[in-house]
Length: 341
Length: 173
Image 1 (tube, rainbow over the protein chains, first blue to last red):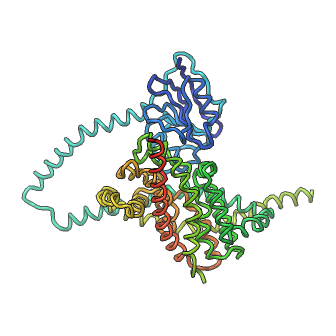
Image 2: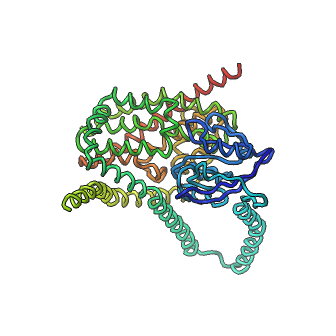
Image 3: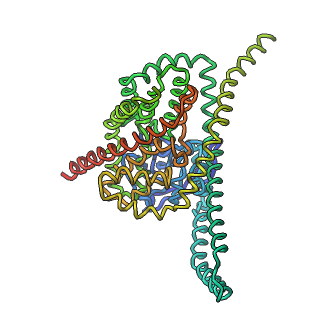
């Protein structure tokens, strides 16, 4: 027996509330969080009568997913499921951000959710429809059917007006330049958006950590532990092996946050001369052997892989990393000869 | 009273170091990134994603280009995370290895083309900041990172393809 529940945002969260009801076909709660099925996904499944599924081990066709539970810090995953028009529950307090921010809407997405945010919906509560997006889609569809007509009409009118006089070189040039300028402007807008929404917040957070580390003396401890490790080839191989272990790589992957923080810390040590400059290259590969280990099922589904491929593909990628992680460090080490000498 | 004032000063000191770091990054990294990202993504827009589709389809046939040219095109033209959508051009049995190659190129690309993965710049930028502190030029590191990246994604692609194939064969038995 399926029951409908309401999922509200937690403190600092965004979006929702979502009132959802499973159907016979659409009744899976997919947990794409790494490290097993998240308790929130289990609770949602219990309350609604759905089945909770680990998105890393089992792949589910999109149309059977009622809710996707993610723990995305705002880089990619939080937008992937809304883009597919699937209800998305984010465990971290992240709003409408990331490269797919435009797809994140209040009737598809709710964040900072914990178990206390889940309640049974009182009878008669209207279900949250994905209408906001559906209506949008419908509008686009109607536009599509009407627009070509008007465009064609406009073109016909233009053709009438222009009959006899062909567009001269200057006009063509003007139109061309206009198009190019527009694209440059759009590129600028996207860049600033990216800087404000992702790069600056990251700088704020990391410089705070770096500041505390260097002012409090923890920096010296790191200098004495990580620096020796990252300034020898065997040390870096150890780092890459640890990062690529199949049960560790999906956990430390999200948003590359850990790799970015470690990269920054190593940068500080390189700047201080504790780690030789030419080790920068192998270090880049050592601290990032896990890259994308958390994103395999999502990335594969973006590449239109079928569920069977995803199911075997996830472990294939993770196992492969154990070999290619350390190997990439060795290759980078060889390529670093002669750099900054 | 003095003790409390001393405590407050110590507390502020803790964050002054962070503030200095933040100011240095905003002044030193952001301007170049903004201009570079704008320029590259404008050029990418002018060329257009559709125009590279034919080339991408060609690149799927050969094992070498499948794990070099194809991921590079995907990452440069679509960036993170839409680059994986080029996976639709490859056969199902090559999708996991294509994913592995593509995701592994998302960081080596940032040294030269930060637009492709603007949200995760600091894997490279963090380490590069140390090189800058030493007064050394970044070009050498960025180019080598890019080139080693190509070698690594090729190897990852091939290794993952083999592992996937053997797992698939085992499952079918």
